Image 1 (tube, rainbow, N blue to C red):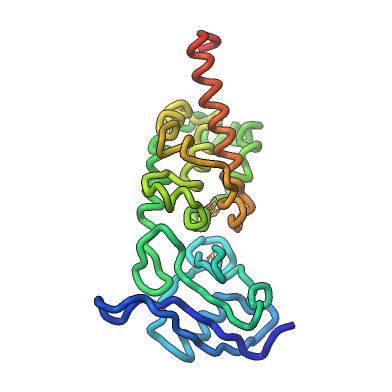
Image 2: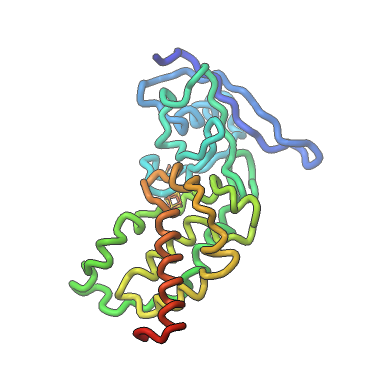
Length: 243
Ligand code: SF4
Ligand code: FES
């Protein structure tokens, strides 16, 4: 049952360099049963505090820019219904973790994107743009290709918190896609980029990333499959089986 007004608490950046983050509370009217957390943020910005900073664009779960932590759990603000998270009448919204905060809920995702780029810097797609695009191997990784690089998995991952050098779930999922597309003639190079202590072997299969992905992707499974592939590759080379 919706309450008429919710208490929206937002973790705000300090107003002065020497101050610390502070939670600010806003009373926000519930204007529709379909009201999202993004709608609530917009209401607060327009009606209570124009200085409130957050990021959004598409408002339909496609662009990946509105990621936040709602009541401690990562989610897209535009796809998180107030009615689902209202609990005892309060919603707490804070920025995603493991990336620098620019202001309020706006984060600098450049390190996240740089890691995703680094795992598969080069791809050479033989047959791109031809009927070969619809290969069986590509269909098999279709779900993993749906990543919108929202960074929610990166924020939820405990290992990123422990090892800032860890590539993270989205980057390793991207590596899996690049290495599994049989049109990519540089697929084996990808394995070289991720089979190291800050890559595949750092993942402990906690499924924290899988639990929060708004696109239903399981980076954990992608990482497990890449580990298997790397191990098979090494065994084949050790025993000189195949190439
Ligand atoms: S794997 Fe899912 S949670 Fe991670 S960046 Fe891609 S869409 Fe977002
Ligand atoms: S505004 Fe684009 S995913 Fe939320």
